Length: 241
Image 1: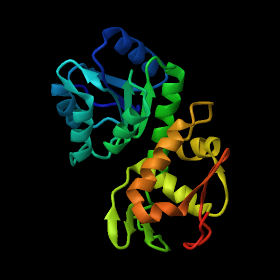
Image 2: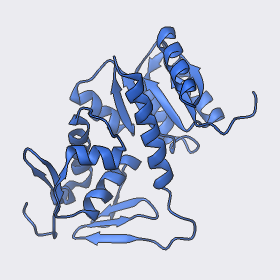
Image 3: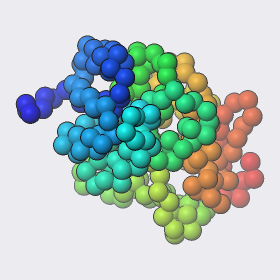
């Protein structure tokens, strides 16, 4: 294999040749390097060998489930840090929830806008860069009632029990905490957490908030819904919302 360039690298795991050609052409035109595989059986091997910056993962593959591929990617030592965007024809809420439970960073439903997909990829790359703590930084720990957040270690605890969050869930939580007692609209969260500056469905925010609350259990009550507007983190642990 040739030496890898300095361009951001996208691994496309998709079995539809026409869609692969469209994605490769548009991504390469937008300044990305691409590699494509069409089968679940080779996806993990190639991901481990290439270590791409982002993975586009179709859920319906001819020899296996994209969900199983995502689970394997997120449990592998050399691949768990790689952001995964699921690309699928299944757009029901339950499908999105399952995808995010597996650790997917974003979820795009076919048919989709290639331009929007590229913007989502760039947003994830920006998030990945800004989420890395500076070398030598002191631990930045926030304690709020039953919740403890260690920003530097990217770890969250509820009643001293660790809660495993995806990178995006962690960023969503810390954004809400930093702006506690201030209402955040769904559009604001899409812009500031997802990095998306275009109008897209805001159900993505609702799905992530629902999953975040479930993971936080009792501490999930600190995230309040403001009907017709968005969400607000409590001003203090005893704030009933």
